[in-house]
Amino acid sequence: MYLSYAVKNASVKMGLAAMLLLAILLSACVDVPPAPQLGPNKLGVHLLLDDGRFQWPVAEWEAHLAYARQAVGAGGYVTELVRLDDLDVAKWQQFMDLCAAQELTPILRLATTYDTDAGWWLAPTLDDDGHSYKIVARDYARFIAALNWPGENHFLVVGNEPNHGDEWSGRPDPAAYARFLLDTAVALKEVDKHAFVLNAGLDPYAPNTGSQPFVDGLWYMDSSTFLVEMVDAQPGLLTLLDGWASHAYPLGPFAAPPWEQTFQVDLLNDAPPLRYTPPERLFNRGVNGYEWELWLLDQLGAPELPVFITETGWRHSNPAYPAADLAADYLDLALRGNNGRYPQFPETGWTPWLDDARVVAITPFALDGNPAEWGHTNWLDMSTDGRILGWQIDPAQWQTAVED
Figure (cartoon, rainbow, N blue to C red):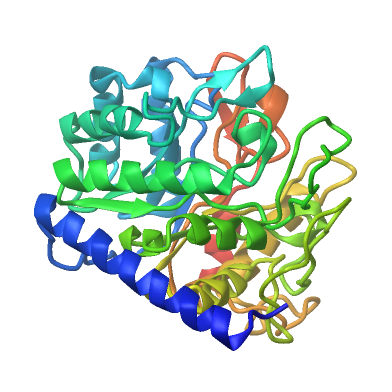
């Protein structure tokens, strides 16, 4: 449902005023660096050296990064989360040094802390004023500033899928996340002129459960409503972002071929209708779901932002999912298109990521998680102590297809 002209006009004026005020505040404390130069290699992979609940021994990290380099090549990206309760500069400097040795570009996701008893990620602690997150933001900023990064751009994702209840102490709060993102972005840019700040990727498959919890006892909010309410709460927020993090997972769930895409939002209970309805043939679920996000960002007055697909990928090695070889074919197709290389598959129905100038990084989930939990997404076959046993999804498969 679209806003009336009068409401739109008032909203735009308020947004412009808020953005002007935010720009004034930022210019007083942040030196604006030159526009970052992004590398030519878009390929990457999401690491799970630490998934928030389980961490591989640091002694095994070198081998994991070597396999990541083999998969994505020089200049490729590796995404890795760092918990708020594990901002150990000495330990994470080892990760940075390994990235440098392997010529990999790190993307750090600044996570909160996982509550094992509750079974969710905790919302960050509010300041004493009850509405800001400046203390937590300073903790992240001190950590980031103390690291010696391997490249000029310091890519930083603030949080993860906050439209999920299990990512925000049980219930999504778009206004609170917006303030958290704003405070963290400002703090990072104050201490590091090379900080390249990205939003938390949203889950386009999450329903809106309204005022009632889902069957699992948690609340969820669809990504469209969540993003709109973020901007309602902090109208100038999007001007602080340097790029847009997207979780462009295939249908299936996470099992369908790349040419299968759709627009769907599940509104449950008393969830309100969508405020913005996209044009036809613009999909929010599928490998190009970021196109819908970019459209919505444009409606909300955001600047043009490069897209970082920080999560995507196919589940595999389970009767409910494709075999590992087929998952590798789907990934190759999503990256490069068909062009006759797979006669059994369609040629159209999606935009290959490597052909899309808006997309600058793709880090499928995941390389190396704890096999008890992530064996169906891992590219690597892992032992329970962190040793690598070989490939489940072998990058040589799609690299050979490209050469052929």
